[in-house]
Length: 55
Image (cartoon, rainbow, N blue to C red; front, side, top):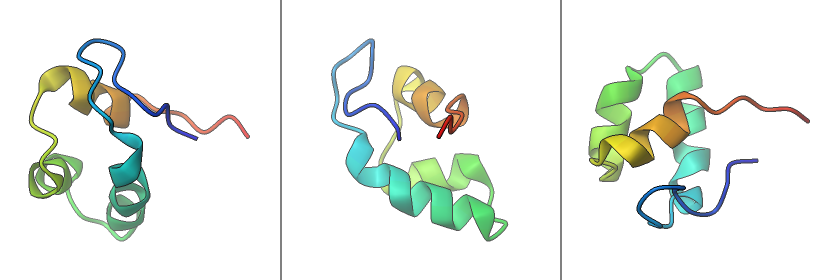
C-alpha cells in the first residue's frame, strides 16, 4: 500500500495509485500515466516509481 501523502510536498497521492498500478501492469509507460493522472512534481512521481509492495 502506498502512503497517503507525498513525503516532501504533502500532496494526497494515494487516490491515484490503483489506476497507476493497473495501467502500468497493462504495459503503459509509467511517465505518461503519471502525466495523465496529473502527478507532475518530481517528488510525487518518485513516490510512485520507487514504491515496492511489501505485503
